[in-house]
Figure 1: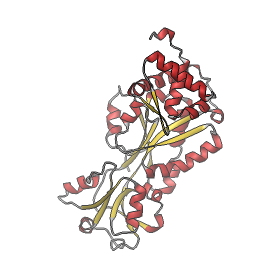
Figure 2 (figure 1 turned 45 degrees about the vertical axis):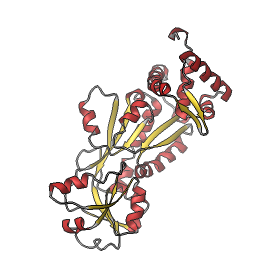
Figure 3 (figure 1 turned 180 degrees about the vertical axis):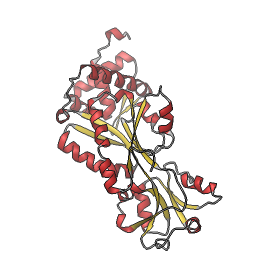
Figure 4 (figure 1 turned 90 degrees about the vertical axis):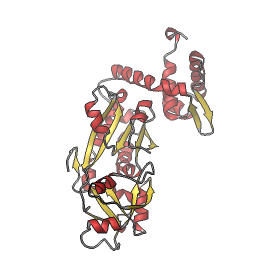
Amino acid sequence: MSFLTLDLNLLRVFDAVMTEQNLTRAAGHLAMTQPAVSNAIKRLRESLGDELLIRTAYGVKPTPRAETLWPSVRSALASLEAAVAPETFDVSKAHATFRMAMADATAAFWLPSLMRSIEREAPGVNVRMMPLTTREPRPMLLRGDIDLAVGFFPGVAAQLSSDVGSPIRHERLYSGHYVCVMRRDHPLAKGELTLDNYCAANHLLVSFSGRAHGLVDEALAQLQRERRILLTVNQFFTAGRVVANSDLITVLPRHLIASTGMTDALVSKDLPFTLPAVHLDMLWHERDARSPAHKWLRQHLEGMNTVAQRLAPGTSPKNDTY
């Protein structure tokens, strides 16, 4: 294959299909017919000598070559768009699909307001939520699996601040603190929560990996104490349901209690030891940094600090300390 003979329009089609993982949806995004999209992908396959996309019952699945190629294609297209796009951006006429990764409670916290804004301001914008099963979302961003990650990523932001060559960008949305959460009629719900009572209770830990060890256990180890983690779950909503209907207690970021849907059944107590502040960070790849649509999305999330403060008084927008 010679790059000089490659039809660059095929790369726009490839990008749309990779984004949607479906030929019909990609055709709608590109204002093309589905046969035209299929033909474009066929031509690109022939040019590159790779299948690129394999049909499945639910759409298409990229080959390893396609996954390797896509980040470079997206970056190049974003740079071209930024160079030729008009200075003014009309979000009401924009067409874009964002793939975002958040934990379930974070999504419940942010998405209602985001959806209202999209329905009101950006009817051509779509959002696809991807599962977040790690505290290290950078590989997903580097591969182009997602456009934006929002969550608590301890250590990542600090590394990015010192790694000037990293293509990953980040911004802190706000900071808050952890509290101990239990059902309202729990034996420990009245009075001050002591360290002895805390350690003697049965605990639930929200762990994406299933590993029964977290920040709390590190803090307790410094005090030469430990706790029994009876259950680990990978969803905050599940944590809220279990704790509201058992004698287990858990530790949650204060701002996420409302996202469990069990606020009326739960009570929070100050922890009898000190934990670092919990930060909510937004991460994205530099290939999207100049995209007007991506900027609109980031600016919207930045503007939701007032929502955070209303749901969790005491949070500190864009503040490293609580």
